[in-house]
Structure formats: C-alpha cells, structure tokens
Length: 410
Image (cartoon, rainbow, N blue to C red; front, side):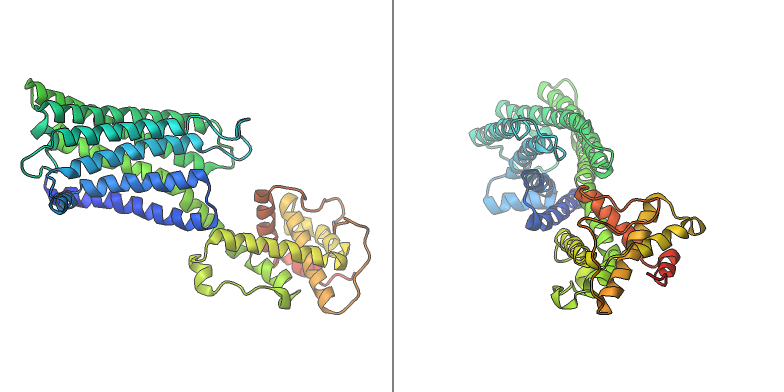
C-alpha cells in the first residue's frame, strides 16, 4: 500500500479527533467538569498519535529533530498517554446522583500513572539504543525486530496497547449498567467506545505475531504489521472517536433544537410582557450556529421564561384553561399535551390582561391556572423535565384549542 494512502487515512482520523477536541473546548468554556477535561485531553493525544503516524509527518519529525525514527517514539508514547487518560476518563464518568460515598469513583489516578510509567520506559529504551538507518514509518517493527533493545521497546508498547484496550472496554461495560433510560446518546457512545477499543486490541495481537516472527526468524508476516495492523487500528480509532463525538454532537443539536423551539414562548411571555427588562437576544447568526455557547443561551432562555411566568401569576385566570379542557376531546388533546395547551392558553391570556392595564387578580398563594379534571404542569421537577414541559408548551401556543380559548370570556 502506498504512503499516500496511509497519509490520507491517518490524517483523516487525526482531523476527526481534533474536530472532536474543538467541540469539547467550546463546552469547556461553559462548564469545565473533570470528565470533560480528561476526555478532551485524551482525544487530543489519540489524534496526535495518528498525525505523527502519517508517513509525511513522521519523516518531517525526524528531519526537524535530527533523530531518525523519532516518529515511532512520538506515536507510541502518544498512544500510551491516550490509553491511560481514556481509562481514567471512563472510570471518572458517572451519571448524576450515582457517585459513591467518597464523592468520586475509584481508580482514576492508577491508569494514568501506569501508562505514564510505560511511556517513560519507552523513552528510556529508545534513548538507550537509538534505531539508526533511514526513516521507516511503515516498516519500523519489521526492520528492527531482531535487535534486542528495539525488540523490548516494541513488545512493551504492544503489551501496554493491548491491556489498555481491554481495560477501557471493561470499564465501559461496567458504566453501561449505570446509564439511565433517558441517556440513549451516552449509551450509544459507550457502546461505540467499547467496540472501537476491542477492534483496536486486534492490532496488538497481529503486531505481536508479526514482530515475534521477524525476531525469531521463524516466519515473515509483514502484511500483518504493515497493512492489517494499521488498518485495524485506524478503523477502531474512528469508531472510538465516533463514540466520544456522538454524545457531544447529539447534546449540542438537542440544545440548539430546544433553544429555537422555545423562541415562540420566549417572545410571547418575556418580550411581550416586559420588553424593557429583557436582555438583548442572540443575533440570527448566533441562534443558527450557536456560536456563543448553546448551553448558556438555552439556560438563559429557560430562566427568563420561568421568571416571566412567575411575574404573570397575578394575572392568571382558570377560564382559559377550562376552555381548552372543554374542547380537548374535539381537538384530540389529552395527558401532557392537554396540560401544555392549558398552560399556553393561560399564559397568553395573562399577557393580554397584563398589557391591557387591568389590575392583577388576587389568587391564593401557590394557586395555578388549571382546567376541570386536569392538573397543572408538574412543579419541582428536575431541569430535564422542566425543559421538556416548556418546549411542549411552546409548541402548543398556536394550537387551535389555545387560539379558541383566548376568546373565552373570563
């Protein structure tokens, strides 16, 4: 296989990893949690390993440093650093509310320290007997397997690679048991990381077979080392990157979707009710691309809507909600959709009343606008449930039952 093909494959994997890093850096501007920091650094080192593994970059590193084949050391140490960080990252991750009594999961520093020690051993072995000769980005293992120190260098790396892959897969499997039913993106991401690490573990097996064959002279299996191994590792790395990328991209898309779906409700109860107190809204480009951090924009929008609902409470009347309930069967409304339509009608009616200059109505503290036979929207729910409810209310603002209820006499 040509070096150009390896350049294309390896640099593509590296670019995908660096793209993942950029997305995570955007999230780090909003919230810098330890799992997110570890994941970002781990993916960076994984991508760096493939970038230095590309023959063009490999040779450039040797020419720049004046040390032949230093690209091999850079690739292998990057992979070991990635392996330790990946194990620690998966071990540190846990769903909210499921941390142990100590406040954090165990075995976080161990993998990092073990792989740092392995990387130090690789550096020492490389410096002890620097492999000479021309740059061999694709055939280093086969060219130097018969030399004792390089052979030890190669076997230490393959052992570290193989055990790291199996350890990450085992930890991912354990974490899958903690994933809740509503965390489908996280589950799919963990499954991808598990599958990718198991695929990558095959690289260690085929490489070891090829290296030992070349070292003993019993057989030659260059195709395993030069073709099968690199292609398997690239495939596994892409699957792993997809596993890391999927939850982040999915969350970003969901946040952006809900931010835009909440726009009608925000305009109805925030901008219309108290336009002077409303902070400047994000511009059209920011809304479309979420350049300013979609998590922050979404949180601000939810807070502003919640504050506006509270300020409208004195103007609320049960009449609009009752009108929606009376026509619910005709409009096919029931359950959560009925409650959302009632809430939408109550809020719109309250906005009209507030803008008309009428005095607020006096209600008992905590009383909500409800229709006959139905309850108000749940209160005291967690942020995820509250967000889903607000999105549902926003979607029902222009429902025929809601529009008809606005003309109901109070």
